[in-house]
Length: 515
Ligand code: KIV
Ligand code: ZN
Image (cartoon, rainbow, N blue to C red):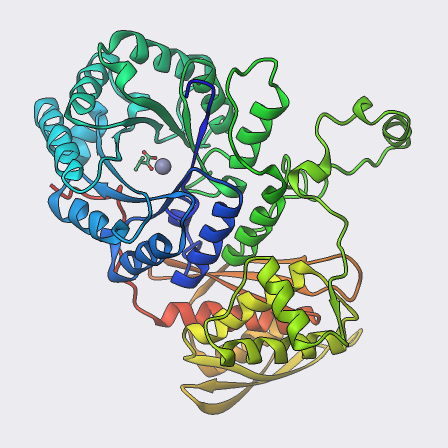
């Protein structure tokens, strides 16, 4: 076991805590299936006590995933642990991850508990979770700012109580690599029963050190890393799975352990998460950024052609980069469409869903000759969006944009099925479209972010638009894709408005005092 590094993916839990990144049950299942295909060891599917919707999503992942362990998060309180246990029940292998804060600042100000009360509660929580499953993980939240002596006492007690994994979170991303690695070493050396548990780490990226801190911990004996696809997560995010996995694999000379990840699934996973959450991947992002393997300068190209290793330490194909391959076209039939979707992990529950997706595919193939896997993913995301909550539906949009003239948009939106018209001028065609939609909807939402990226290459590529809106402290992201970026923008805006109208009551696992 010592040479195996366990990959615990928390994209569906900590990743989802990122403002605007919330996912539907079906989206979570799609991502979970991709993580399973990638051979992730443990998938943290969510925080079941947050809401009934979160519970259902964790349960659905537990039902669908067979090869990875499915984990539910629980604060150290009875209801959370019982809900997590219930949600993971259908899983082939299920884990409960329970936590309580151990730093002075969290204990005093958030929990208002003494260290002794925290220690007692931690042991109680692990014992309760063990009544449901043998696979229990415990985290002392904000361990990165906790006192080492107290951490040793808590961890020794929870291991004795039955925690098989103890996870050390740098919750606020405060540590430096040598310090965090040193903490893991100290804990493993000083805790008498440390050999009875796997040491895990969970690092946040507030200072851009999440991956470095996690790797330093691995060099000091941690054998589980908690991470997310594309580094998604609260604030500046969590450690990026792809960077952890590829560093350990590329620097085998330094690491005495390796993961069992199928690295060729990394880029597809990155695209899927970006597509579903609408969080674009920056072009210069390591491993999964569009430029990560691009060689621009002539000197570099020359070097790479003569001998690849001159400027490449990894091979693009090993992480799943393939040149966009045309997979389908205008003349592809329904069976070819269904088969290709199956190959990329998408299956429809009903014939009706398949038929409607096929209709969309035919429309797209009329506008765009070559259809790539990325187009298919976007198409299915669009399909899910339409089925989600159809309070508002974009029926039609006409925009006039001409040099020297003020752009003007006319739009028809169905509000609960009844069609309404609106029009407005704007600074540009997108601005005019949003104003025209607002003239019907009157949302009062504030636009925080608007971004467009191309799904594949070429001027006939679909544009993928993300719109982030804020209203009354709530942040939602809307997505839309189309070969016409103004229409994609309007779709994304309507999708965000649909999310704003649905009231969501969700408990955040790390805010407030549950005890
Ligand atoms: O960052 C953190 O401390 C967490 C815990 C719940 C593990 O996400
Ligand atoms: Zn976290």
